[in-house]
Image: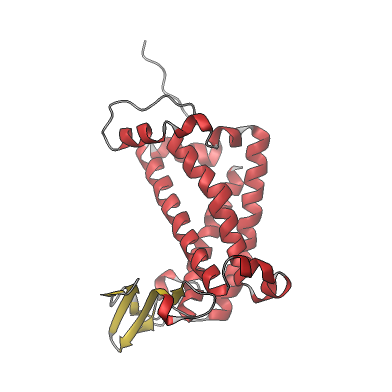
Length: 251
């Protein structure tokens, strides 16, 4: 389970980086079954040399140096959605980006299945899933985090918000990102076109794929913050070796 966890973390980092490389080839997202500027949700580009802009739902922001006009991976700056330091490869190369992305996508799928099976066999998966009894404690737990409540509601190994996050990521976001990725693949689309239709076409599938990526990044950031604030040395040791040190109760 720990091996699957860490290999998946590596695969996810490569997937995000290579995915941004692929995005650079068509730096926009449309809520449509085909490319349609009238239904553009996100666009990153350079309307003129030296100026980078990001447009979200029709609102344009100047993002020169960060997005639109930025590092081209070859020591210069040019019209490029995401900078070279965050993409694989660093220079613009759609073909290689797709190779990296597809290979590590299957690595991530294998790790996800391995983690699911091992967690279920060990009984950990049941502890991490949101139950009906947990639902009523979601707000009290959030109120505790927001300092609106002095004590958290009673919970076992995982609190209700953790269970909600794990349930959503493992059983909603992860399957969706795999299915939308398949819908984006020309080869998969050729043999399973109804899947692409189900997501509203390839452009819509691309939008869902990007949204799922953002959800996974948000989960990853919160996951790291929780580890850092709950004793980073002890938590990291437990995730690497399996040994977790518990403090002795006061005498």
